[in-house]
Image (cartoon, rainbow, N blue to C red):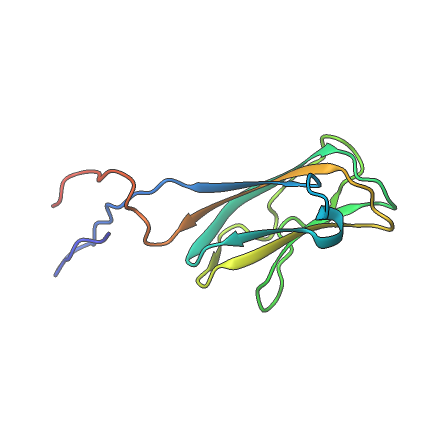
Length: 141
């Protein structure tokens, strides 16, 4: 929380822990048909993310996507090949995207008739103005 100031710099002393979501895509019965939904709360700032293929998805060049529901949908990882174990991808398009009203991220695999595999999808984010769970640092000037 900012301190009131009439002159000079403003000192920001609130701190917070980052938040993470770890979704296992492919573990559910309807994951392939329906996808997996991740809801980010209002005032979320997406800071990083990664995909790791644990078990191969079958099909014709299966590609995993994670897309947000913004007015211009953003593909967070691009298209990640999901046809080999150990394939990893970092967040390519979504770093430092702010969602003032929250967001819905949909994870799916496409590519012909896809057979189930397993991928772990991690998203790390902060929430603006959330600093109630941590300490205050430093002295006030």
